[in-house]
Each structure stands twice: as structure tokens, then as C-alpha cells.
Image 1 (cartoon, rainbow, N blue to C red):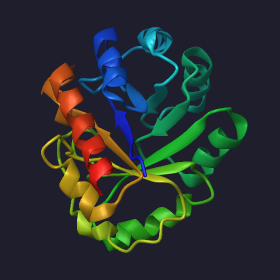
Image 2 (cartoon, helix red, strand yellow):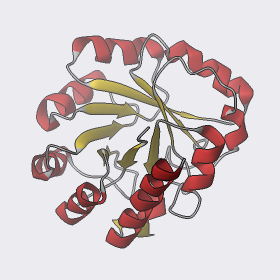
Image 3 (tube, rainbow, N blue to C red):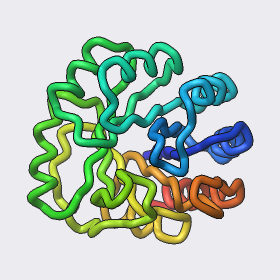
Length: 214
């Protein structure tokens, strides 16, 4: 079964093209001013327009108010909205039910207890994205978490694995968790916010090679 790939935090047409050429399924645009990967909604819309049909657009928001959320959806027209803050299940469900986009919720995973709490989003989100616990920023920190926390978990929703992944460790992560989707950001960068075309290609190749051999 093919593992889906998301390359997050893109900010220029070259990296979008590289993600598409490498065989990624999704690319992420971060609209959060504190992030080194922040892009304006205007820039996000331009990058979405530049992407081929094979690549779905994910717009990442962090604790955005209703006005910004609605404007972002209408202006950028993403395929997916990814919430990466302390958004409630009620808010996630409202956005999902009133928009024509998929809604993903990213969750920092510390232990089995925090994994159990993810069940409150089962009737709200279209997908859960398990990431390392937030530090100064909610994501893109290059930090992984204990993958064994996910072992044996009965996932009710489609889900994805994030947090410190790169071309060198993604196969180990997949062997440990069997994720239907893997999400990389800092692991394909040469500097914070600067995507590296060769690292994008290497990451996608590692995932595809694993899919072919398992």
C-alpha cells in the first residue's frame, strides 16, 4: 500500500515543483507569523496556483480566529486546512461541516495518555497528525517522539506521522508505526525555512523504496 507523503513549510515555486517531481501527495503552507516558514495568504494563493493537480494543498493555521479562518479558506482555496494549535473538537467540527475542505488536527504526542485524549477529535476531524510535543513553536522543530506510543493503537481516523522525520529515519519510523501518511518539514531543509531540493527527493525516495519492498 502506498504511503502518502506531505512536504510541509514550502515558500517558493521551486520547492513546490520539487515536491511534485519527487512524488509527494501534499504540500503544506504555513500561515503563522512566528514560524520561519510563514507565508502570507497572498503568497500561499500564488503557490497553490503554481502546484500541479497531482499535489494537494494543505494550509496550516495556529489558533486562528473565525474571521481569519474563513478568509484563508476562501482566499487560498486549499484542499486541506491543518490546525496546529489548541483548537477544540467543537471548532474543528464546525470548520469541517461548514467548508468544502478536509480538516486535519495536529496533536503533540507525549505518552499513551495523550494518545487516548486524541479520541475526542474522532467525530470532528478528517485526519489526525501525530507530532512531537510543541515547544516554542507548534511544529517544524525537528524533534521526534517515542514512536512506540503508537504501537497497537486502534486508529478510528486516517492519520499521519510527523515530528523530526528525515530521509535517514523515516523507514525506521514507518517500520515502527505503519503510518498511512508521513509529514516532513525541517528534515528536508538546509536552514530553518529553506527547503533543499535534493533532501526532498531523498525523503520521498526512501518512502517509496520502503513501500516497494515491504
